[in-house]
Length: 431
Ligand code: PMP
Image (cartoon, rainbow, N blue to C red; front, side, top):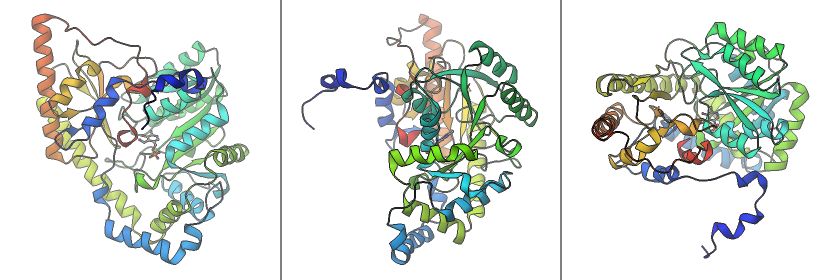
């Protein structure tokens, strides 16, 4: 690298990126990937559960037998074959009768979010989102210079009265509600059946669009998940999902199911940024869905994650200091913990890393600097005994902090900036 520093360019940055900052927390995440650290910070699926040899053979054949198309450019909307398969996948979740014509294939769910932002958001626009919410969505909304207003959740997900209040507070100006109703990232809670109708009714009454992000709906541990919002209402609801958690995130294939009128705008926005999604990755997913037992594989993921969730929950039960609480997810990858009075998850992070355990501080999941008493714990990636060891280390750090506070009062904290979710977010490998 040359000797230039970031400062040489600050005057030239677009207004869009000027607000993007990095934080000391990010540096800690690079340490978190060392083998001696038990990372409860990531969001990575357990890829070793895939039949990797069979997937490898399939990928080889995709190049050798179908290279003329799989290694060529494709169309911006994504291949018809994959869009048809995606409609079959959605029908399993209860979204019946979706047309492949209304599906846009994207580079992971992340690009789906980016396209929605490009099509709908102007600087200063208001987006309503659960508090806490997916850090990658906050990054997209921040890049679009939108303002995020959080809507509170409880054990049954988004609170309808809080949604009505948030709408009233912004004078009905919100562009859309961004929601992860099922096995929410990071909170691990699920919007109850009754509330699904209520939330949809509130949105219809106020003409508020709904952006439903559903990467985890198929990863249920206790019966099937409630049907998505899009299965209940098609007008005004955008449905986003991905193969990252049901197959493999390395392929970067996701999609949006959009009301027909908007689909073309999404395709044009996508073409402007990537021309077309990877033909090879789309071919891989299409082959996987046509020739391999993908439904069985989802069951395997569910089994592995259920066992790991149980291991994490029982370790928390056994080891966490009194006053700590946490959610009890019925699916997905994450538990959301609330620390005892006086502890600050962001300030504690360096000491946790020194004790060889990592988590994501709650501030990463809010646009407004709240979340200091929370942390997100991932259970999909580490084996049960590692999860327990991670909790043991974490509990040790918390006990020490509590003891210090009892003796000395609040320990001097590092200078506290107003939190920036994107700045405090782990890198993409950990999101
Ligand atoms: N939405 C949510 C709620 C997520 O948790 C994630 C991944 N962590 C994504 C979207 C994006 O995933 P991907 O781009 O890998 O499909």
